[in-house]
Image (cartoon, rainbow, N blue to C red; front, side, top):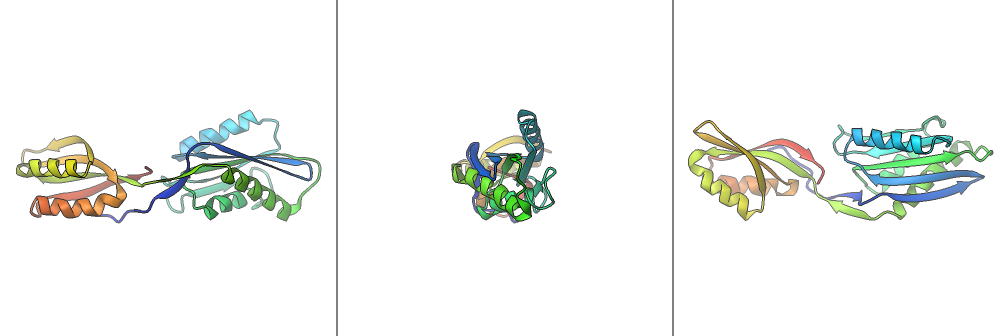
Amino acid sequence: MTSHRTAPYRTPSSTAQGELTEKGSRFLAFLEPCADRPTAEKKIAGYRQRYADATHVCWAWRLISEPEPGEAASDAGEPSGTAGVPMLGALKSEELWNVLGVVVRWFGGTKLGRGGLARAYRGAMATAIENAEVVESLYRITAVVRAPMGRVGEVHRLLASMDISYGEQTTDGRVIGIEISLPARDSHLLEQKLMEATQGEGSLSFVEETAG
């Protein structure tokens, strides 16, 4: 069985907002839960449309569904490394996942310099994080339990005892396959109990890992 992430991850429960003004420039920050890249891209497009009068709409995300490192950021026309990267740093410092951060800037007429920009973008993002309700969620996995048909009763009783939901069941007449969903932290315990319940005839195969 593949090793999975078993510790809870931190994520905002809902959209939070923060604001910062620096030398006339206004920085309006948003932090919100986000499960995948298509959703993030749609949300970013929405912010660009909503704040079409803004000078820049910069963003950063950290998504469990993306290949490692699972994070990305955009300066959206600001000098390279002065907006998206500092925002991403704020998300990482709080160990947030499945999260999208957006900072909308209106230029106030005075240039801030690279250092000033970086501090402003990170500061605005940090303010939104401070205003957010952050919760802990569990990673979940989808897997398939396989066992001889004669062991179906034992498998069903085991799943019920661990309060594990299951869906599609397939069989070739000799072996049954049951698709299940459970917290990743319980996968090793299930694997152990499955071997005991089926006297070594059962197996557990990983399908995918998702956010809780």
